[in-house]
Length: 335
Image 1 (spheres, rainbow, N blue to C red):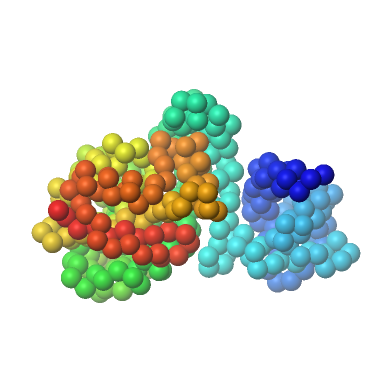
Image 2 (image 1 turned 60 degrees about the vertical axis):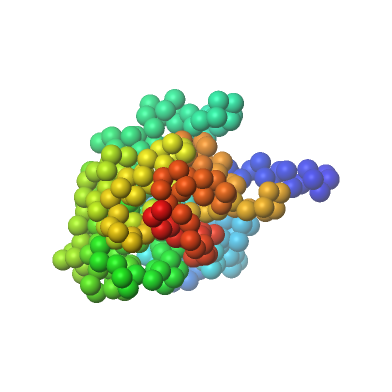
């Protein structure tokens, strides 16, 4: 076999790897290895799975570097595998699971048609667009998993973003489409005089309220059910974390214009997104872009494309800096 063919085999089986990780996460196998190596048979008994199949799964995971093999069917947890635990800081368990759940997996099944027609086929795959699908009562469990996954992803970048932002002159912050409010709550924790708002769809606001209560910030926090395509609350600062990439250009401009119309004098907006870099170089953002094409109507963009959106909506980018996890923070001022 040529080196090129070997590389292609590894590339084309990426979906198999993803589902292997999903099975580990869904069965909570890493949690059962937290205290040290355990045999596959003992794990199977604990999680209620087939012993032989569980051994085969754990053997495959060890070949990926997610588990370690300690001999005699005993497996341990590597640093990589720790990211699949449910009870550890920095966990990516929910992210692994949601990327392999029905909404994403079914939409990816129609990916060639998305490329042919230049738009996601999630409506054909799911009977609704992604966010309408999650809003249906029968999909509440998957929607809750998506919210947890977005919260976990948020926490990969918000620490760096909060540390980088000068919010000393900010009284009110609106986290636009902010899920459980991790970003705005992080800013509020660093600034005792700041009031925070999350604007979200009705099915998501209870999670934000719960998170504010858990962090002891409920007295300065409000969760508002609304539609950022219609209007946003007034504020000194708007947070748009991983929002722009969900939507096509026209709708991004609408969101940004609504923020521009409501912002207080001298106010700002902060956009946190992956930014596509030099073409032809290894770039994880381009893979994420393919997921956006498969699952949403949005896309990842380069800086020129973002600047065009900002100019069309009354904003100007004044600063750009990395905040971790492959994400950049784009700071905007009102024109």
